[in-house]
Length: 121
Image 1: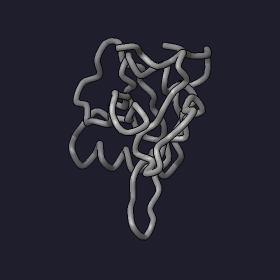
Image 2: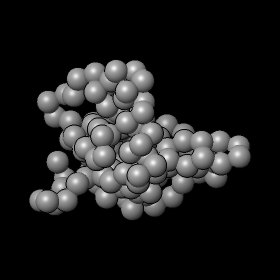
Image 3: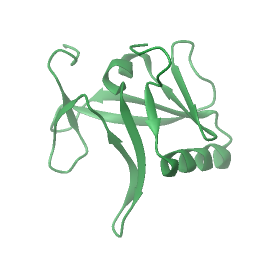
Image 4: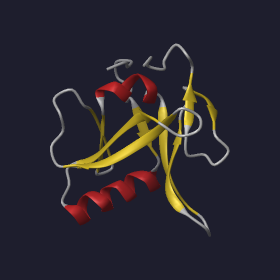
């Protein structure tokens, strides 16, 4: 992992941890795997999927009953990210506050990382 000893790769707000723990309980899953993939108008998108068993190379972050697995390819992109869960009149969902993002599209669904981090095709 691209980390600092004693510091978690990502953090979760209390709302995010609560929502992830609820999702884990409802589906009987071991946690959520977060990652990134190419796509969207800014070049990259976040991914989230239910996980029943962590992969050997996943970085596992646990907080307040919630468990997140970070896919190996995404670890360097997500280091330092805070995950929140927001509810508004029109939508609700997870929000990523990622210090590695240099730009985002207008709709907020896709992101761009520094050229030094972005994988080359």
